Each structure stands twice: as C-alpha cells, then as structure tokens.
Image (tube, rainbow, N blue to C red; front, side):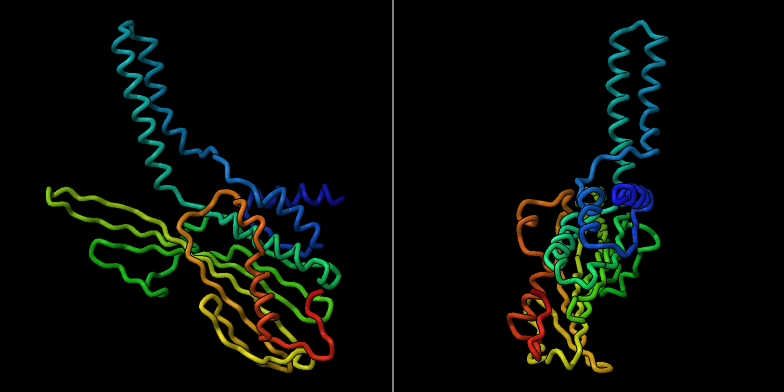
Length: 291
C-alpha cells in the first residue's frame, strides 16, 4: 500500500512540482528520498528542437553536395549555430533554482522529531517548481530595491515548504522556508562605445520555526534576538507564540545535497536547541518538548 501511494504521489509531484498531504513521518522520509532529494538532471525541453534546424540543413547539403571541403565548412557552421541557439534559449528560459539542500534541512528535522510527534502525523506542502515565473514576481520597491539607470531588478518569491505538526506533550510547531531569487541585469557602455549587458542571480532563504506553547506549561524568560536569529514572542489566548527566523544569503543553488549539509544538524534543530539551551522557553511541571 505504501509503495502504491508513493508511486501515485510521486507521479503527481513530478508532474506539478507541488504536493500537499498529511502523512506519517516515515512516509515523508521515503518520499523525500525517492522524489525530492535527487540531483537535478538535465531535462529535454521542447524548444531545443529549434536548435536542430542547422543539423537538418547539414544533412540536406550532404545529400546534394559532393564537395567534401564545403560540406565540412557547412557542418562546422551548423554546430556553431546550434551551440549559440541552445545557449541563448537556455539563458532566457525560466529558472527553477530548486534548493535541494534546504529540502534536506526539513528531512533532517523530521528525523530528529519524529518520535515526539503526536500520532506520528505531519502536515506538509512542498513546491519544487520554477521560481522565476510571472505569478511569483515581486515589485522591487516592496523589498527595498529601485530600478536605476543601467540596473534593473526582477525579484521572485516562492514558498518552498510549510510543515505543521503537534508534539506529544501538546505544543504545536510550524517550520517553513521562503526563497527569494533576484535577477539583476546591469548595462554598461564602454569607452569604445560598445554596450555590455550582464545578468546575475542572487538568492536569499528565509527559514522560520514557530512554536505555540501553553502558558501553563512554559514560561518565557528571555526573548532576545541574536546575530544569527531574529526571535519574537507574542501572547494570545493563554498561549505563547515564539517565532525564530533566519535569513541566509546563497550565491549558488546546489543541485544535490552536499556532504557537510547531509551530516550537520538541521537549521531547524539548531533553532529548537537554541530556545531550550539558552532558556528562551522554560518548562513547568516537568514538561518536555522533545525527548
């Protein structure tokens, strides 16, 4: 039954790049292993067929020409044009920029807390789709940027994952990740009069962990932020809501989980340990968030 569910869910995820469900922790770990934490492979795209035009021209020349030297020249030019066409189309196609390492952070956190989750059920939604899509486009002014002479900004935002569950002792927890991809295009005029255009991509990850704790079970002793974490506390209806945020700048989006990331503690585990070890939250009546 699990194999069948993994197959059906995996098919949906591969097709839509999105998935949302409530499943046992072990199921999510299998799902991540088979469908999420995979090296991004080269994928054929329909517009690559346009690049085959020069090759077809070469074949036609081969059929109609007897001159070997001319055929060699045509073949060389055709290959050159093919490379240019593929490079241009690939450069201008929408980018996915799927953060495999960040999904690994969630998988490691599930491993860490799975024995403490109520009924072992975790609600989770995932999105491994293209971030550079019109529906994800932001206004540069909304995040503090302004297009100027020679420089234009195109920011995109996408929620990569959102997970919600309840610990066995009654507290609820949410972990999530938002990704912002900034496409920066700069145009400069050289002394020679030629114009050069350069495009760069910059990325930011916004990790967040939220705990909802009963006032009767936990007290808040210190609610300070650090150089690494932005911590805030809000009290409502007999509960303390603790939010821990982490902003991370990323230069390159990895196509696979690297060795260091695989064996290091999850970012969310470090957040949780920080709250406990620094006594930001203090349990009452022998309460224990995780064993």
